[in-house]
Image 1 (cartoon, rainbow, N blue to C red):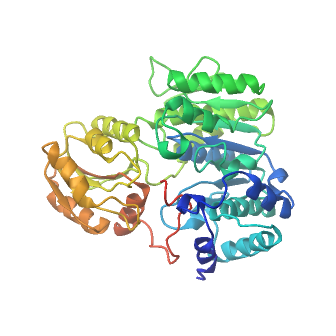
Image 2 (cartoon, one colour; image 1 turned 90 degrees about the horizontal axis):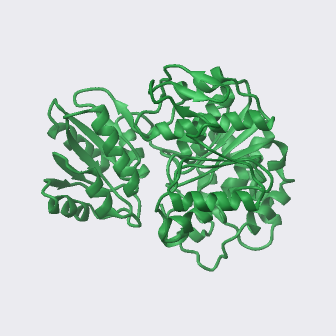
Length: 441
């Protein structure tokens, strides 16, 4: 395949890669969309921001819409194996030829817009334009970072969604939960509905304030006017439209229960707003049939392997709870790689105790030295070994783990992607590595 589109992206300046001369803002993406004829206005959109769960929520929402008979667009980030994963129509990612054709059109628009643009702006414009060209009925868009200044926020979405908010990317979004919530809540549109996950008190106060100021009807998942789990039948989902009995979510892990609530509430509000009708049986199908790799992905075997992209302290804590629920009493051998902008001490502590830590690094310039991760584990009395290869670390972990152990690969979606490739679950991409958030993820 031609790698030219990805090479072009990698050649563009990006604030997130340290191009500080480029002012942050939405003016570039708006100019690009104007040059393309505002393709984002050709279909209704659902915009999803948050710290945790936004990708899973987007995937379940899109799959349910597709089950209801709609032609869907899905834009997510980051990717696991190829940047083409980020743009999907009816569940299918861009082919190499489609990627080249879509990029050629956007490059033409870039040439008509004065001043520099960024790689993330280009990818966002490409997704929105491709969806229009493919005649989608509805698009589900995952915010890349924050919300207020993210390129996706240039879209006048019919519904805004806020998944769980906690501390992450503090060097960019702010050092408190309420500051981060304010950045993310900016995706709420005037007079248009908003769905939120249950939030910490300070985050919920911000969301309620923004929604009130903008006249945006707010529904909080888990409450009486939204989807909520039946306390007497823990896998029955109660909704204002009826009961989903013995729901069996395809995405495992206790943290997904909140994402299921949010996705089901989103589908309820889509129906209420009138731009899509998603029956409850389609919602069930989307929740039970969705495929979203790298999020508590369990590979059965001896030992079983769990692959999860937990990359901040709270996600690591939830992963640990999920492991204890799914594999009670089993020893854990961690394959752990972390990015340098993360709280590595907090992540390591949240994941312990463990029988052994195989400290490793993804092929990413921001990856923490495995020796530092190993030292953190040893400080807590856990033996640790280092490897500069995720594949090698995984193989060593499988050898070390006993029949009553479980191997857990985590700490970064980059590590997850390389582990999946080492396990033969995906072909390594022929494209050069690229991530528009390279300096912050």
